Image 1 (tube, rainbow, N blue to C red):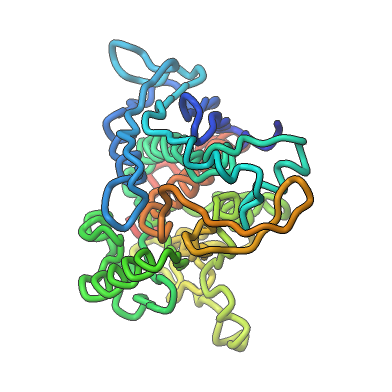
Image 2 (cartoon, rainbow, N blue to C red):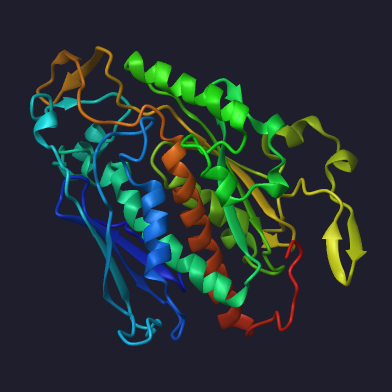
Length: 376
């Protein structure tokens, strides 16, 4: 099964199914002698894990990470060899799917996996399940530590900006958002009033057996200029591909995104200005990327998530015997994926950036001696 490896210089291969023994990843290309804090990786996993609030699936998983290889046992530093991280599954309930595993669930990957491989892991969706993102979060937390070892001022911060028709963007000052602010409420909306309204909306949808989608906003501050490659490997193209690889993602906007079509060129351009020896732009409609290469300004993007495909309302569907049949789904599912998507978006961004950094270093050496990146 191809398509399980991400990155070039920093390569991550994930493995495992939703209801299998474990989920994990192998990271190849991590530079040697980087201090690796497994507790920080565990913190990232705990932000993603199920069962953390009444707003998410009640599946109970501690998501305790184990490192099987790649770290010096005495110092905890990376050896430069493959790092294997694994999380054991503990609370699978495959029987929840047994009665209707022959039915193709609407907007799931049941039919497409069958069409491609001739069989599928129907228990929990297998590799198509969001459970797979556990491994991405572990690898992303590792990548973030590599980045911060070289760029101490780098901050990767995502938050829930919108759920369904409730848009919190006007209430949030994006440049000041921190992870502590994001994690202050289980919705991961860094505004108390909007967080309460969005919580009520999610719980109301849950009570009806429905689900809601929304938007995650991401800002990456302290990014040095020069990351990303021209033409096919543009940094914004890599970020978009990374986000579109996530379950339930249907759209990505970089900087001004679709609002750019409403502007003239002079309105949309980001003027340059020297400040304290740094070249900055007085606006950031480019989202920190120009010509596919980082310009030193904060990278800014939005990721659109569709409503969770599993709903508890009766639906019409079809089975693998050529029949049109009704479907009444059951089981444990997120009524809204947005709160748990935040650390996943951060992880994928970190994986893109560390790969871009190592590729740049491999091509031209380290071009940032003593550089203070804009936003540090």
